[in-house]
Image (tube, rainbow, N blue to C red; front, side):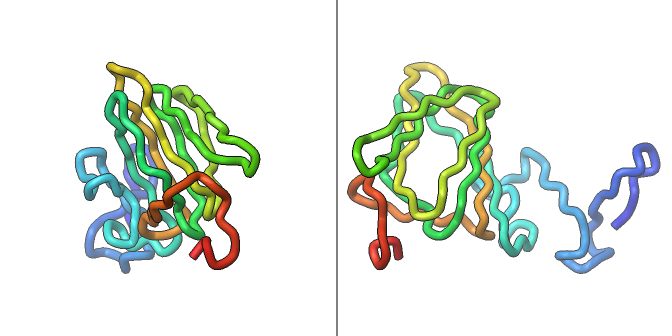
Length: 147
């Protein structure tokens, strides 16, 4: 690890330290698909982060992220996050600057109802690689169903 002489900020340099003993800088144009930080990109052991863009008038399938928590930061657009609370479907409309937490095994989907503007979010997950398990319905998974 070296230090930037102007700011004193630590910066990672290739080849001067073991993979997991340095600070990694992933520039915005260097994403691996959607992944910025993962086991494959920088050797992360417990974290995945990436940038996701959902086009206008789109929706994901119903899914969960296994045992991983997902933290979401809305960069732009107005996504709608949909899940079932055990009694009814719940819809949360988010705005730029909002943060959301999706707990492990909670089925949900993301929608972008805007006809013109894409939604851009940054996602962090508590696993080194993304997990996405498609499910037929938005219901709370229990026991063996969650696996």
